[in-house]
Image 1 (cartoon, rainbow over the protein chains, first blue to last red):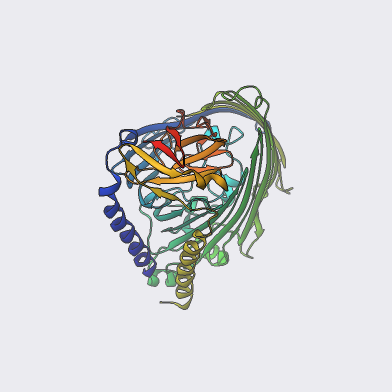
Image 2 (cartoon, each protein chain N blue to C red):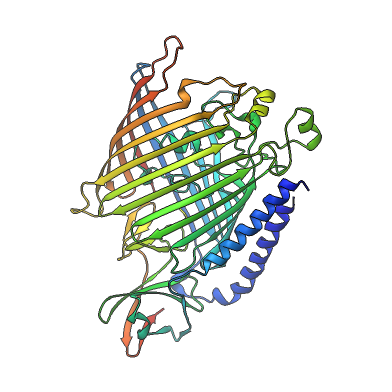
Amino acid sequence: MKGFVFVTIFVILGIVRCSSQTAEDSVGNSKFQQTTSIGGYGSASFSRDANEELSTINLDRVVLFVGHQFSSNISFFSELELEDGKVSGGSAGGELALEQAYLKMNVDRSKYFTVGLFVPRFGLLNENHLPSQFNGVGRNTIETLLIPATWRELGVGYYSNPVGSPFRFFAALTNGVNSANFEQGNGIREGRYEGREASANSLALWGSVQYNRGHFKSQLSGYYAGSVGLNKEKAKAIGLESGIFGTPVWMSEINGQYVFQGLELKVLGCVLGIPNADKINKVYKNNTAEMGFGGYLELGYNFLERKNITKKLVGFVRYELLNLDVKIPVNMDRIPESEQRNVVVGVGYYPVPNVVIKADVKFVSFRDSDKPDFKSKNNLINLGIGYSF
Amino acid sequence: MERWDFCNLCLLAGAGFLTETLSGCTKYAVFNTIKEKGVARIPLALFENQKQQIVRISGVDYDVAVTEVAKGEFKAVVLKCSHAAFELLPNGDGYECPNHGSTFNADGVPTKGPAEKKLTFLKCVVDYPVLKLVV
């Protein structure tokens, strides 16, 4: 728990400094008044699965932002999400959840802490997950299955954006993950707590360095967490290691973006490691792999770049490579869906910057399998709309 | 405490130290100034080598990016996101918000949402040897 003490001291120092600045900085200036802000985003989609010969239509999500500025140095931000249109008591499907709810405490104008439930800086999509910010009807496969999409946890984050420097820094301490809930084919996605009664016996450490130069941006991020939140005695009884970083999970990613005159190039690679996967399998029988890898390359172009700044017509192509079973323990069975090579081709039309109409085709190739009736190739046709404000 | 946990804590402390140390690797510093009778003054000489300066005005909650767009012609944009009041960061030819990912061009016009409104600009008056910002 010394990690918590360490971070708590940092936060207290930050708050003390915030308090000492408030009197001076809040001197009234009509152009800089405190505000309560409301916003949101949402998306709906139609999908046709060629193999299943099945079409579905869904209100994927509706999210409401509420923010409030308490003083020049302390603000609150939140995102409340309703997924799949409806949550009904006792029946499966649908989700009502907080995506974010945190206090932002400025140390100065280029450094701040976030305290609460927040989306850490990891990958390209996690922080920028609004439908108007990514190509394709659905979020890309790598940042859904390997890096969980809108991955939020409870804890303390620290952001440093030094003025004039090409570097930006991020570090955080949050709760860890729960290896009991890992699911084959989903990486660690189902092991997230997402702010709900998380065990604080195990913790997670996040770090990221971003480099910005002109139209180019790249980022290197790391994640290291404990995955057993039981006490020492109970964990020992089932043969798992507990503690802050007991039965660890690590993940690292590197990405780059180049945006210039309508051209947008994105590349990302990510590796996931669970060194004690064999022990997790022995206890929970959830076919946890020791190592997974994923990456994608995406090229997009706005065909209206030279004509109109408010309207956009973005065509894109993305190649995705995912293997969640790069290294597996002896007590695990592979499934073909864990290895995918996908090509996604699509278009997005923005009549105004915050409204998008999308269409794409996803050509999916799974690993070949002896499973009867298993088709290793599939095509998905997707149509969707999205908005943000 | 287990040896491994101790190592991890040392790494955590080391990462924190490194972050702060690297934070000092800036190509130019913030120019601090004060506001007197609604006017903040900055020396024009600052723009000889660097066409964009970040100005911190005492009593104003957000930094101001002042850019010399042509000889003797300046633009001063308040680095406050028009969506949810987050601090903006200069990026490429414009600005970006690290909160919801909005981007703005050099004229303060949103190029990527969710922000919809233009950024706030301060009036610039050249009064050699200083540039006056009307706050």
